[in-house]
Picture 1 (cartoon, rainbow over the protein chains, first blue to last red):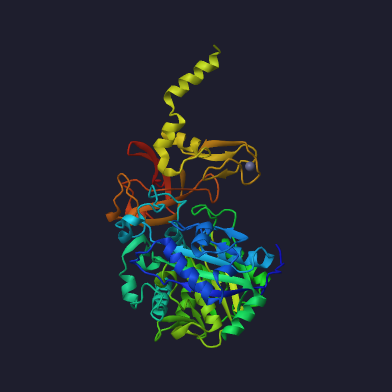
Picture 2: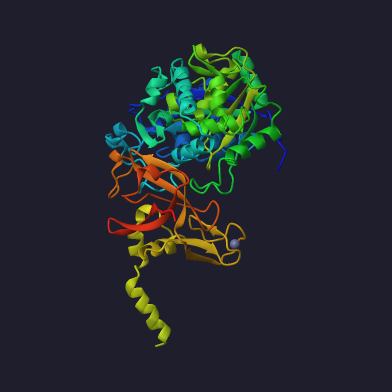
Length: 393
Length: 160
Ligand SMILES: [Zn+2]
């Protein structure tokens, strides 16, 4: 495996845009994408004429880079792609375009849209009827994204775990979402409410699963050199991608994954550790994905905060009961924006956006003092595990 | 006319043609690589892809052996015995014949006896004892009809 990382600290994230996320949106996916994109380009101090790369996503109902470019009035682009959803696919694609010189200023646009298959409200909306459905044609189709609950029961079986650590992940997200004006769900969540949560895929209940929402995030990436100049002009701290990767194991079908002891998350962690100068003892913030709470337990264990099966004890020991949130050693906060469970199911773009806000000091009421680096781990453990370390730079 | 031709014709009389097979299993995402597996279901035989060269089994069906890159793959009937490896109970999901989410619909991933980590996902029989619906329980394949289509499910493998 390679140790080469010529891209280390060479690409900056200079623009952020977000519509915020809602359960009752009434805009088209393109409209949301354009709101986020124009905000991100403006936030970077750039105009459409400066953007020469467009990375869209293959999210259902999302428009391609050609339609985004046309709608934004971008003059010309030398890089345009449409990666899989989940944040690092598009962010890494954009970063590699910048690093390679394929484009100078790359826009990443990632709308998410409630589908008729995952929201009763959306199912009643005639404008969403044409949205490509990922509804499972048969209940027992394990190749679709339904097996996290099954692996949660396997985890409980292997480690004798209780639902307590699952509850803490959900409550932590809800607590943090309360300070995030972009978040869709901000009412406090208690252990009692979690325990009474409507069961969806036993052993996972409604609080264990990310929240279908409407909204969009957008980013602008450029070289670290240009990023430092932009940040200096704006009086902000520059933010660079220190290390980033995706990872899978070969046997990653949801029901054929050999076991939790070696998943794509381990591949991601190994690669980040090869290429990063910073690891968990040094990071100031941790943004593990929680599309399903079992994913988050696995991330805590696999990045090395605790041993396999150790998340239950770890989360109990690092729980701030007054604040109702996770504080690792009282210092490292987790998913300060509320994550996928409460901000909304943004496929991890929210985790990256929030990390960038914290690093450059624009996180408002949520701002954590003197943040230097953040470990962000979007994705689950089958076919989309991902990770990045972002730092001031 | 060579004798073999008549034999083939006789077989074709009982087998669904491709269009009918696709129609019968369209919701399953059937493709050329999994066609033999689904034809097997019509005969109530659970066929799993097995490599003729190295003996490795793989599922879902793909055209090449992931262990040795051999293309000599034979869809081969498995014993249907195994143990519950993964388990969840759906309380909502896509509409399906005979599936009542109000009571919770179990989905079991069974580790088949033929090879470690070779698994098949389905549900359990209607009379499966609730107190045995847990990881580790030995099960055996049975067939039920769902909308008139033979469907593999798992029943309790009685202790002997
Ligand atoms: Zn082989």
